[in-house]
Length: 188
View (cartoon, rainbow, N blue to C red):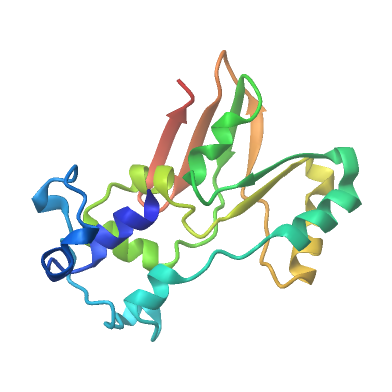
């Protein structure tokens, strides 16, 4: 999962040697704990936070926000996708024959950039594994998008239209245009 990949990409080999109980023998030795950091390190990219703080930061609960959005939009709320625990490709599980286009995601948070760089994880895989700082999606028609954004912002949650849904072919597809390029995914 994403937390495991992040640990292996960022944390120093000494953790694998010092704490053999955390070792997953299914992961080849050269891929285990290959990063440059100790838990107490504070890379400048993290703005003063330690690697441990960044890795253990809890995911925000969106229940109050989504409850208010559901109340306000009713049947005009066509879907909610919590991208944590499935990455940006989780959207492929919704609907049939749709093409999802995400071409205005939020900037990639520094933690994910560190994982990508130090773990040599391809950007395409990063979007499959991680939420990339974009955690919750509300599927609504364009005329209701501004209302959703306003509700989220009342709760202190930055929001914006990140893409659109188009008619597709015989299966769902996803195009992401973001850091590192353009990526295509399908729900084969």
